[in-house]
Length: 267
Image (cartoon, rainbow, N blue to C red):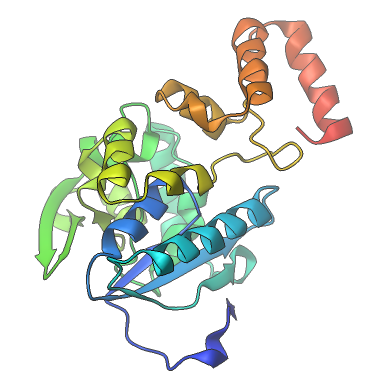
C-alpha cells in the first residue's frame, strides 16, 4: 500500500472514502464534495492498466483545480494507492461474483473492489444512470435501495433483506453517491458546469488503451463515451478509429486484423 505524501500531513478520519479513477464520474463526486467542509480519502487500485499513468495524471490535475477553486471547503487526504495483487482473497465474495456474472456480465474489477471494500466499508463507488451499464442495471434490478443523508453527504446503499444475496455479497459494502446514481452523463456534464468546473471535464480520463497519450476511440470506455453523447472527449483520430470500428467491427477479417495489431502495437 502506497500513501502519496502521507508523511507531510496529520492523518484525519475521513468523512468520505472513495474509489477515484480520474474518470468523469468519480471526479464529479470529488468536485461535488469539494463544496462541503468535509475530509475526503481517495483510493486508487493499481492493476497495471495501460492507462494507469494517464489516470493518475488526471487525478493530480483535478486536485489542482479543486485546490484553486475559491469555493472549495473540503480537505482531500493524500491519495492511497493499493495494488490489486495485495487485496486479500475472499472465497465467498469471489464465488458470489462468479454466480452473479452468469446473470449479468459485470466487470471483473468488482471482484477485487468488493474484496477491498470488506476492509474499507462504506467506500463510494461512482455509477451514473445508464441503461447499458451492467453494474448500474444489476443494482437497479436486483437491489433493494436505501437513501441515506449524513449531514451534507447523500448516498444510496443496498438493503440486505431486499437484495439478491450474491449482489449484496459483491456490492453490499459500497456506497453509491447521489445525485450521481440518478443522473445521466449529459446531466452530469451540466452539473460540472453548474459547480464551476466546466474545464475540469477535459482533464478526466476514461480510455483503457491510450495511443500516444490520447484516447484510442475503440476500447469499451471510448465506445461508451460516444454512445453517451460525449464524443467531444475524443480527438479527431480517436473519432475516426471509432467510426472504422463501428463500420467493420463484426467482419471476420477486421477481427483478425485487430488481434494482429494488438500484438504489434498494443491496441
